[in-house]
Amino acid sequence: MSTSCGLISDIRAAIQSAAFLISKEGAEKAAHSELVQSLVLLSQLEKELTEDSPSAIVSKTTTSGSSVTSPQEEKSKVEKRVPKWFRNPQQINSKILMRYLELSKSDPFLTQNKLRAKCEDIKDFDGNYNQMKNFGPKNHGKVFEENGGCIVLWEPVRKFILEQYEHSVGNDSVK
Image (tube, rainbow, N blue to C red; front, side, top):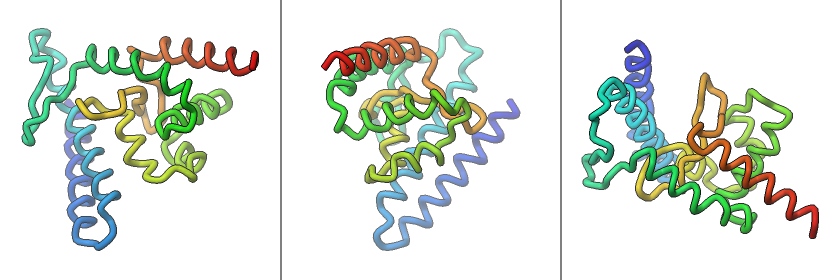
């Protein structure tokens, strides 16, 4: 339960940061990013608190009334979308994933800051990255998670993503 306290503290800090940003003109995207991060952390806390209960409700409802998807729904979403991402390398989510995969070959301790630096040409990197590491009905699909500050592929889709990447790289070398 000690990580629960840390998550609560992180959620509080992200919400406070978003509240501050809302009062600053022109900081809407940053505030949005902080709020998305808060939802991600809240989802992690929710998972931690319900992990011991095998009969936990799979689909929760947020205060806004939108449903939060289950791990199986996220996995299905990723399996539909990732092949399209590799076929359309100009998409923002494709760029982020491809750059992650390239960087992770030489840096097993890849952090969000390192990936952000490699994606400096991507507008609203934080918002898009956050959409790729959380659960949600309108996210891009959960492909990342952070462990100890390091970005890793989300375990339920890790093998699938790597297989798709290898297939994509193989097809590119033939062209």
